[in-house]
Length: 290
Length: 180
Image (cartoon, rainbow over all chains, first blue to last red; front, side, top):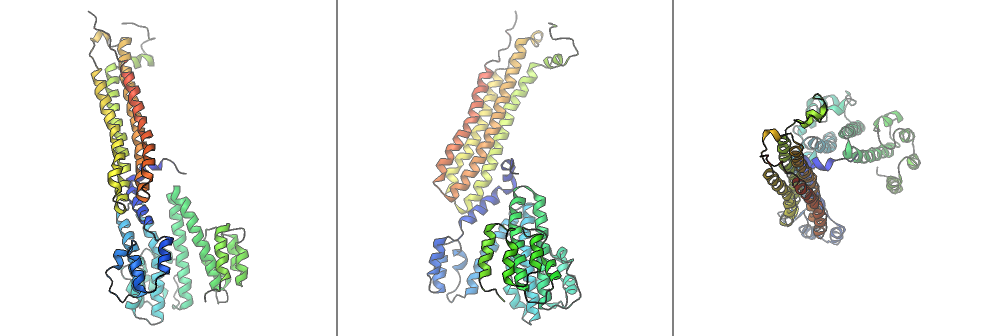
């Protein structure tokens, strides 16, 4: 699996690999988090962050800081680094990097559609969107009345177009349908990403299949827990699970019939190795969100 | 002409009828050409990582140029051996071109060129890959630099082995004395 890649990898990937390693060195450490925990005001936080890599992004902010400003500026650092890497990348790395943004695009689309449903202002919603998932014509989403229009007006020109084939109905958008749309899109996106990584082969396929399998399993459990007690039928629930991952296919069969949160954990026993299952059990012992 | 190599249509005759000058020239070309290929390969491998890592850790640039110098040394070995080999080329009268002595000289120069060329190719590759890892780890933790440099020194010794054996082989390249 790992062959003589070191001889030719640096042609296209050497510079970017070195940059990514530099970014990794800039992540906040446990000592940084300890300092941040001891801060009393937002200005203290700004002062502590000025010694880290986030310093240049926060230093020009005027003094009455808001939490949203801090979060926005720190996200801006991520976005700048991502965009720098995207310009420097060649195929297939550039396609891979773009795949990372599709998840954020799906979240932004759902945010705007839900917000419009609840009669919020489009500008306000646009400011809440994640910057990595922005695309042109995102504001036009507020005009659409049902999914067919959503697709025809806006989404057919975006990279999300191929994920819509299962979703196009003429039903009006309401909360339930929007959640189903979000999960169907995300399922199609994960499967597409998985196929792309498998096609690349080598270390990419090996590592990404583990990460994406974890993501698929996490979403399956999430969907199960969130749909307990709602009107979502078992068949609809099963349609939202991805076609890969450690829980596929037997775990999905068991999860589809769960009616109670305590039934979820035993479904995963034996199928997922101990690390994710500890993670799962820790979450399930807490009160589930509404 | 000694007819000691079997009948005239055999492969062995075809091989020994290739002029020793051809073998010598190809040997010298390989000595310099493939060495430079190895050096260039090593330099680009090291250089791309070094430039990327130096963005966040500018202090590593001056020290890590040593890796590039080790790769460059590989090309210099190739040049030196090519110059030595070309001084071993002598012209012999046409009646003596296919003497065993001449053939031996031709093959010696060819072998010397291949030895040096390919030893330098893999040495350049080796030093390049280690140099790239050295730059990346030095950017994270500066105490690692000297330790990884030791590995690089062992790697660059490979090229030297090739040069030594190549020069010894080229001493075998004695063309027949011109007959009176």
